[in-house]
Length: 331
Ligand SMILES: Nc1ncnc2c1ncn2[C@@H]1O[C@H](COP(=O)(O)OS(=O)(=O)O)[C@@H](OP(=O)(O)O)[C@H]1O
Ligand SMILES: [Mg+2]
Ligand SMILES: [Mg+2]
Ligand SMILES: [Mg+2]
Image 1 (tube, rainbow, N blue to C red):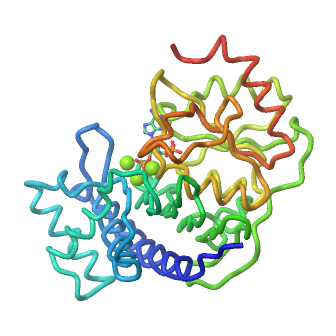
Image 2 (cartoon, rainbow, N blue to C red):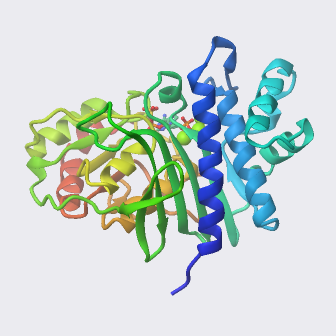
Image 3 (cartoon, rainbow, N blue to C red):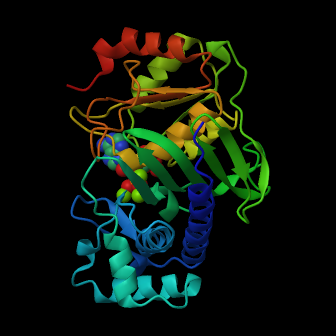
């Protein structure tokens, strides 16, 4: 069976370095550190800094590998102050970085193709959570011929134990196709394997969903929970940390239900999280039960919605979705 150990080592190092940058920025975040992109979504100096750190790291280790990443340096045209702050932050991680090297690294994420082998990166997933001092993730995955084969999902602020939110925080979920998911601390030491929970009773499931009601339909999730007989409140959590929660056995179900017709999920919002859950023994499909298709380009255009679970309760969730679809599916 193929292994990707060199890629794994490089990806872990890159995500740890980027996570440090993100935490540095977050400790002294001020109003000028973020702006709205053309699509009105927020982006911060840490999103760009994280992308620069990771893609320059990968460029050194694997110079021929293309990358598909969320951020685009073109959005920084004219934003001189923001640009300078990004460079300063990257220099705290890599003192040799220059304006040219930072912009070049960010632009390495512009690969539009879908062929062969490429990396996909969300430098900060859950930017709104990052700004709120809640959860966010640094999500990096390697795709070969349409298949996610390696991923590092950095969750720098995720408590080690969700029941003890003020205990130790921060972990990486590291996965390779057919080789499982491992949990590392933020210094790069392996702590344990990740395994989904062993709950077979849908009614006893903990469900997690997005914080933002514009990203996943909350009233539909409530109707599904009721059908399943779930009595406990769902956990609202930002970013792909929801996949981490399922992979670690903190929750049995992650629901992401479309809020408007035609929205296509981005590959960088799901590649790393999906592999983390599947390699921890869980299952990930779209809301109709189809596997997520990473061979279609930058978006999951063949899929709609996402369900991640511990595997055992998956079919019950899909059935509850099918039974409530007529009432809740946005048209
Ligand atoms: N309409 C719609 N539907 C579904 N998803 C959308 C939508 N709009 C945006 N996005 C993407 O949601 C990403 C944030 O993920 P979450 O919703 O899990 O977290 S959060 O509740 O917003 O914090 C977020 O990722 P980041 O931009 O990396 O934060 C977006 O890519
Ligand atoms: Mg994202
Ligand atoms: Mg992002
Ligand atoms: Mg974004």
